[in-house]
Image 1 (cartoon, rainbow, N blue to C red):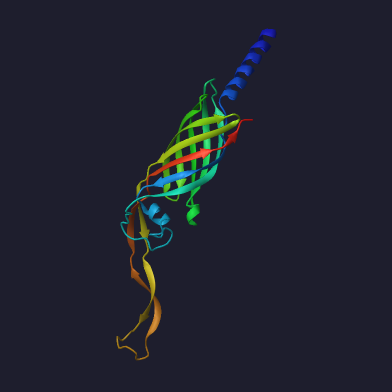
Image 2: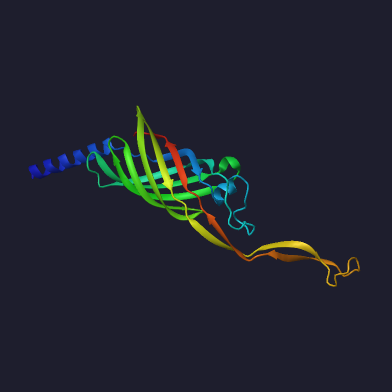
Length: 215
Protein backbone atom coordinates (compact mmCIF):
# COMPACT_ATOMS: atom_id res chain seq x y z
CA UNK A 1 0.00 0.00 0.00
CA UNK A 2 2.82 2.36 0.90
CA UNK A 3 4.54 1.58 -2.41
CA UNK A 4 1.30 2.30 -4.29
CA UNK A 5 0.86 5.66 -2.52
CA UNK A 6 4.48 6.52 -3.21
CA UNK A 7 4.07 5.65 -6.89
CA UNK A 8 0.90 7.77 -7.16
CA UNK A 9 2.63 10.69 -5.41
CA UNK A 10 5.55 10.52 -7.83
CA UNK A 11 3.19 10.34 -10.83
CA UNK A 12 1.16 13.32 -9.61
CA UNK A 13 4.34 15.25 -8.92
CA UNK A 14 5.65 14.55 -12.43
CA UNK A 15 2.30 15.61 -13.92
CA UNK A 16 2.35 18.90 -12.00
CA UNK A 17 5.95 19.46 -13.09
CA UNK A 18 5.08 18.86 -16.74
CA UNK A 19 2.13 21.25 -16.57
CA UNK A 20 4.32 23.87 -14.89
CA UNK A 21 6.92 23.62 -17.67
CA UNK A 22 4.47 24.09 -20.51
CA UNK A 23 2.36 27.21 -20.02
CA UNK A 24 -1.22 27.78 -21.12
CA UNK A 25 -1.16 30.73 -23.51
CA UNK A 26 -4.88 31.53 -23.72
CA UNK A 27 -5.73 35.21 -23.92
CA UNK A 28 -6.08 38.22 -26.22
CA UNK A 29 -4.49 38.39 -29.66
CA UNK A 30 -3.61 41.37 -31.84
CA UNK A 31 -1.81 41.39 -35.15
CA UNK A 32 -1.78 41.94 -38.89
CA UNK A 33 -2.83 39.88 -41.90
CA UNK A 34 -1.81 40.20 -45.53
CA UNK A 35 -4.51 39.12 -47.99
CA UNK A 36 -3.30 38.41 -51.52
CA UNK A 37 -4.97 39.85 -54.61
CA UNK A 38 -8.58 38.70 -54.41
CA UNK A 39 -12.15 39.88 -54.05
CA UNK A 40 -11.56 40.04 -50.28
CA UNK A 41 -8.67 42.48 -50.63
CA UNK A 42 -10.70 44.48 -53.14
CA UNK A 43 -13.57 44.68 -50.65
CA UNK A 44 -11.26 45.95 -47.90
CA UNK A 45 -9.83 48.58 -50.26
CA UNK A 46 -13.35 49.74 -51.15
CA UNK A 47 -13.04 48.73 -54.81
CA UNK A 48 -15.71 46.05 -55.02
CA UNK A 49 -18.88 45.11 -53.11
CA UNK A 50 -18.94 41.72 -51.44
CA UNK A 51 -22.42 41.14 -50.06
CA UNK A 52 -24.77 42.22 -52.86
CA UNK A 53 -25.49 41.37 -56.50
CA UNK A 54 -23.13 43.94 -58.01
CA UNK A 55 -19.99 41.82 -57.89
CA UNK A 56 -18.15 42.18 -61.22
CA UNK A 57 -17.39 39.14 -63.34
CA UNK A 58 -13.87 37.66 -63.10
CA UNK A 59 -12.69 40.29 -60.64
CA UNK A 60 -8.93 40.59 -60.13
CA UNK A 61 -7.26 43.13 -57.88
CA UNK A 62 -3.94 44.71 -58.78
CA UNK A 63 -2.42 43.90 -55.41
CA UNK A 64 -3.23 42.53 -52.01
CA UNK A 65 -3.84 44.46 -48.83
CA UNK A 66 -2.91 44.47 -45.13
CA UNK A 67 -5.36 44.88 -42.27
CA UNK A 68 -5.38 44.57 -38.49
CA UNK A 69 -6.50 41.57 -36.46
CA UNK A 70 -8.05 41.51 -33.02
CA UNK A 71 -9.38 38.51 -31.14
CA UNK A 72 -9.00 35.86 -28.44
CA UNK A 73 -7.54 32.40 -28.07
CA UNK A 74 -8.84 29.58 -25.88
CA UNK A 75 -6.97 26.34 -25.45
CA UNK A 76 -6.83 23.02 -23.65
CA UNK A 77 -4.02 20.50 -23.34
CA UNK A 78 -3.83 16.73 -23.62
CA UNK A 79 -1.21 13.98 -23.61
CA UNK A 80 1.27 15.83 -21.36
CA UNK A 81 4.68 14.18 -21.74
CA UNK A 82 7.16 16.25 -19.80
CA UNK A 83 8.82 18.53 -22.32
CA UNK A 84 6.06 18.29 -24.94
CA UNK A 85 2.26 18.32 -24.81
CA UNK A 86 -0.67 18.21 -27.18
CA UNK A 87 -2.83 21.33 -27.47
CA UNK A 88 -6.24 22.18 -28.90
CA UNK A 89 -6.76 25.87 -29.71
CA UNK A 90 -9.87 27.86 -30.59
CA UNK A 91 -9.11 31.27 -32.09
CA UNK A 92 -11.63 33.96 -33.01
CA UNK A 93 -10.29 36.95 -34.96
CA UNK A 94 -11.80 40.01 -36.60
CA UNK A 95 -10.09 41.94 -39.40
CA UNK A 96 -10.78 45.23 -41.15
CA UNK A 97 -11.98 47.05 -38.03
CA UNK A 98 -9.75 50.08 -38.63
CA UNK A 99 -11.50 50.47 -42.02
CA UNK A 100 -14.98 50.31 -40.55
CA UNK A 101 -15.50 46.77 -41.85
CA UNK A 102 -15.74 43.36 -40.23
CA UNK A 103 -14.10 40.20 -41.54
CA UNK A 104 -14.57 37.51 -38.86
CA UNK A 105 -12.83 34.14 -38.79
CA UNK A 106 -12.86 31.13 -36.48
CA UNK A 107 -10.09 28.52 -36.32
CA UNK A 108 -9.76 25.25 -34.44
CA UNK A 109 -6.22 23.84 -34.34
CA UNK A 110 -4.62 20.70 -32.97
CA UNK A 111 -0.87 20.63 -32.42
CA UNK A 112 2.04 20.31 -30.03
CA UNK A 113 3.91 22.73 -27.75
CA UNK A 114 7.32 22.20 -26.19
CA UNK A 115 8.59 23.40 -22.82
CA UNK A 116 10.86 25.85 -24.68
CA UNK A 117 7.75 27.61 -26.05
CA UNK A 118 7.85 26.34 -29.64
CA UNK A 119 4.58 25.12 -31.13
CA UNK A 120 3.06 23.83 -34.38
CA UNK A 121 -0.62 23.34 -35.15
CA UNK A 122 -3.07 22.70 -37.99
CA UNK A 123 -6.84 22.73 -38.34
CA UNK A 124 -9.93 24.10 -40.09
CA UNK A 125 -10.70 27.79 -40.56
CA UNK A 126 -14.10 29.33 -41.28
CA UNK A 127 -14.45 32.86 -42.69
CA UNK A 128 -16.57 34.75 -45.20
CA UNK A 129 -14.34 33.19 -47.86
CA UNK A 130 -15.56 29.73 -46.86
CA UNK A 131 -13.85 26.78 -45.20
CA UNK A 132 -10.09 26.22 -45.49
CA UNK A 133 -7.15 24.76 -43.60
CA UNK A 134 -4.91 26.91 -41.43
CA UNK A 135 -1.27 26.07 -40.75
CA UNK A 136 0.32 27.72 -37.72
CA UNK A 137 3.63 27.95 -35.91
CA UNK A 138 4.76 30.08 -33.00
CA UNK A 139 7.09 30.74 -30.13
CA UNK A 140 6.46 32.01 -26.61
CA UNK A 141 8.76 34.76 -25.35
CA UNK A 142 8.86 35.07 -21.56
CA UNK A 143 9.69 38.09 -19.42
CA UNK A 144 9.25 37.24 -15.75
CA UNK A 145 5.66 36.09 -15.34
CA UNK A 146 4.63 37.60 -18.69
CA UNK A 147 4.12 35.29 -21.68
CA UNK A 148 4.19 36.89 -25.14
CA UNK A 149 3.35 34.19 -27.72
CA UNK A 150 4.03 35.20 -31.33
CA UNK A 151 2.28 33.10 -33.94
CA UNK A 152 2.45 32.90 -37.71
CA UNK A 153 -0.40 31.40 -39.72
CA UNK A 154 -1.10 30.64 -43.36
CA UNK A 155 -4.57 30.07 -44.81
CA UNK A 156 -4.51 29.16 -48.53
CA UNK A 157 -7.23 30.73 -50.66
CA UNK A 158 -9.22 29.01 -53.36
CA UNK A 159 -11.06 29.70 -56.58
CA UNK A 160 -14.82 29.98 -56.20
CA UNK A 161 -17.90 30.80 -58.27
CA UNK A 162 -20.97 32.71 -57.18
CA UNK A 163 -24.19 33.01 -59.15
CA UNK A 164 -25.42 36.59 -59.42
CA UNK A 165 -29.07 37.23 -60.22
CA UNK A 166 -28.08 40.41 -61.99
CA UNK A 167 -28.43 44.14 -61.60
CA UNK A 168 -31.76 45.92 -61.29
CA UNK A 169 -31.99 49.64 -62.00
CA UNK A 170 -34.76 52.24 -62.08
CA UNK A 171 -35.35 53.38 -65.66
CA UNK A 172 -37.91 55.41 -67.59
CA UNK A 173 -40.07 53.22 -69.83
CA UNK A 174 -41.60 54.56 -73.08
CA UNK A 175 -43.99 51.88 -74.43
CA UNK A 176 -44.57 53.38 -77.90
CA UNK A 177 -41.14 54.87 -78.35
CA UNK A 178 -42.54 58.35 -78.91
CA UNK A 179 -41.00 60.75 -76.38
CA UNK A 180 -43.06 63.08 -74.24
CA UNK A 181 -46.52 61.86 -75.30
CA UNK A 182 -47.68 61.09 -71.78
CA UNK A 183 -47.38 57.30 -71.60
CA UNK A 184 -43.88 57.22 -70.05
CA UNK A 185 -43.40 55.73 -66.60
CA UNK A 186 -40.58 54.64 -64.27
CA UNK A 187 -39.96 50.99 -63.39
CA UNK A 188 -37.27 48.69 -61.93
CA UNK A 189 -35.64 46.89 -64.84
CA UNK A 190 -33.29 43.93 -64.95
CA UNK A 191 -30.35 45.49 -66.83
CA UNK A 192 -27.80 42.68 -66.65
CA UNK A 193 -27.47 39.04 -65.64
CA UNK A 194 -27.92 36.50 -64.42
CA UNK A 195 -24.24 35.54 -64.58
CA UNK A 196 -21.58 33.67 -62.65
CA UNK A 197 -18.76 35.46 -60.85
CA UNK A 198 -15.39 33.70 -60.71
CA UNK A 199 -13.16 34.98 -57.93
CA UNK A 200 -10.33 34.04 -55.58
CA UNK A 201 -10.85 34.17 -51.82
CA UNK A 202 -7.25 35.26 -51.20
CA UNK A 203 -4.27 33.67 -49.48
CA UNK A 204 -3.83 34.94 -45.92
CA UNK A 205 -0.53 35.36 -44.09
CA UNK A 206 -0.90 36.59 -40.51
CA UNK A 207 1.19 37.36 -37.46
CA UNK A 208 -0.36 37.77 -34.02
CA UNK A 209 0.99 38.60 -30.57
CA UNK A 210 -0.63 37.50 -27.33
CA UNK A 211 -0.33 38.50 -23.69
CA UNK A 212 -0.65 36.13 -20.78
CA UNK A 213 0.50 36.11 -17.16
CA UNK A 214 1.82 32.89 -15.64
CA UNK A 215 -0.42 31.77 -12.80
